[in-house]
Length: 115
Ligand SMILES: [Zn+2]
Image (cartoon, rainbow, N blue to C red; front, side, top):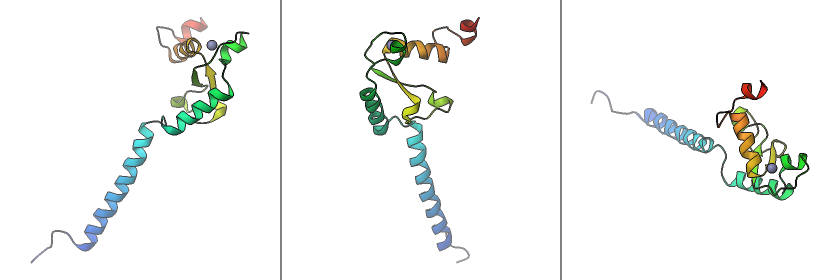
């Protein structure tokens, strides 16, 4: 018998690779969900309980119930997902407006607003 298909050492190495791969896939899986899981729901709920009014409306003297939690600095721009300091309560119109302005959605662009 010239060579065995796999030595004991090779089997162990393969098993170790598989285990590392499993860990990696689990981490990647949760990252792919970008934290929008049970923890985010809890943090979001807490934010709305602490700040039940839209903060943009409040700044303009209006009292509007907030139904949405906004990331002041967008998560994809490096903002902290679960940090209360990066969260603000907004009503839907204010949240949509902010998203449109900051993401350049609905045909608006930052350059157009600045000009
Ligand atoms: Zn508002």
